[in-house]
Length: 103
Ligand SMILES: [Zn+2]
Image 1 (cartoon, rainbow, N blue to C red):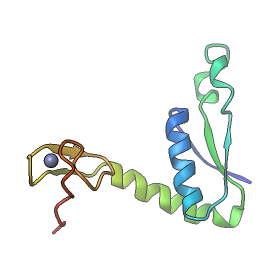
Image 2: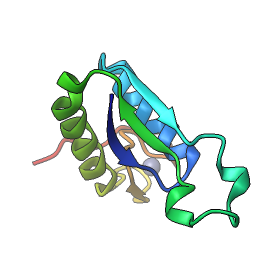
Image 3: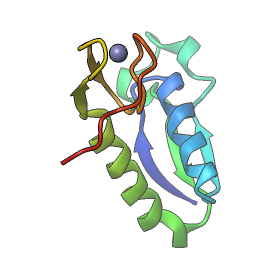
Image 4: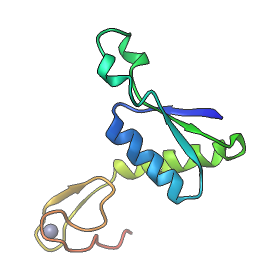
């Protein structure tokens, strides 16, 4: 088992882990239960971590995570209501219109 990444909070750790599991990569969340101890241990040691169970899948997991991070920086304007949509969404959060085709 190999550590993949440290997440800023449990919600994001769970999101990343779920994404990897969907891609067929077995993951394990570590330090999930230490958050209640925050303040008693150094903050960087209290953050949840995503581990890859099979070392052979680590590179693939890293690529997926990089792709996700890139995806989160995406921003586009809705063609229907002109709302700015940020994040990995492919439909407008405001009106539900699909993301316009990328050039
Ligand atoms: Zn819209």
